[in-house]
Structure formats: C-alpha cells, structure tokens
Length: 205
Image 1 (cartoon, rainbow, N blue to C red):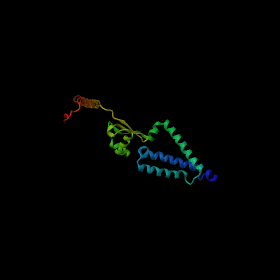
Image 2: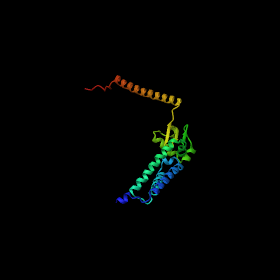
Image 3: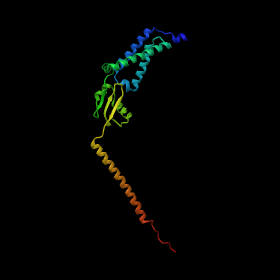
Image 4: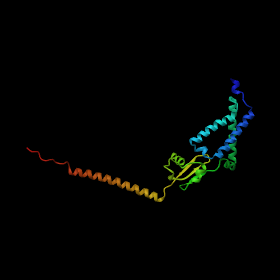
C-alpha cells in the first residue's frame, strides 16, 4: 500500500514538464477563447470546461496514480501560478497583453452589437446579467463593461432633469388624488350624520 501511495509512476522531470505544458496551454487557450469563457458560461461552455479539465488531468498525471505524484503536480501548479502572478504584477504591459482589456458592450445607453458578436454574448444573456444586478432591463443601463476576468459590470442610467420634474409632478398628482378621495369620504360621512337615520311611518292604532 505504501508503495502505491508514495512511489511515482513517472519520473519527476516528466511530471514537471507535463504540468508546465498543460498550464501554458490553458493560459494561451483561455486567452484565445475570449473573456466569455471566464465569466459568462452557458451550459455548452460548462460541458466543454468539464471535459477539458478531465482531459488535461490525464495529460498531467499520465500513468501515475500515486499520492506523491498528485502532490508533486499540485505543488508545481501552485508554484507556477504564484510566479506568473508576481511577474504579471511587476510587468503590466505583459499582463495587459495576456489578460486583454475591458470591453465596452453598452455605451451611452446604446448596445454595441459588434462587440456582442465578437464576445459571443447575446442580448438575452446581457439582459439576464443586468437583472441579476438589480436592473429591470437594458433600457436602464448607461454603460456595460466586460471586464478582463469575464465579469459584466453595469452602470445605471441617471434620470434627466425633465424625468425628475415629471416624476415630481406625478407624485404631487397622486398625493392630490389621495387627499381628494379622503376629503370626499369625510364629507360623505359627515352628510350621513347630519341627515340622521330615516324615520318610518307612524304606527297605526
């Protein structure tokens, strides 16, 4: 049992090369696939990522199913990722090339159809993302950005001066209508009290 746990099925050097190759492939592949793959997943994207993870897992471990082999591979991935993150932090130009720039999908309330087509995002998916952030629809969005991490960020439209005045007038009209209805109900109640209950015909002997 101990032999199966701690004896590597493949040489350490081959394990390191496999891990490095898979990590590099994923960096380049996700960059070419676009930011959608990172944040805006539909069921088809999810299936592809699940199959991809299973396929690349086999590429990393090879014929090695030992515990030590898994620890070596995981440690290599963590160290490589730490080194890459530190390097990109100190080299923003390389980070910008690798991660890309944020993409504006809605500007000044207008949906940029070409940008949606380039990122393979439909208007229905964009509207669903807006609703998840508390907006009723795209008509209430001033700006939408697809960030480098794949997240969609929305900026809500601010009401214009005319819209503010219009809402204030409607609120006043609603208040006047409510006050009028309340006054009408009070006058009807007062009139009923003044008239008093109806008197019937005198009783006959």
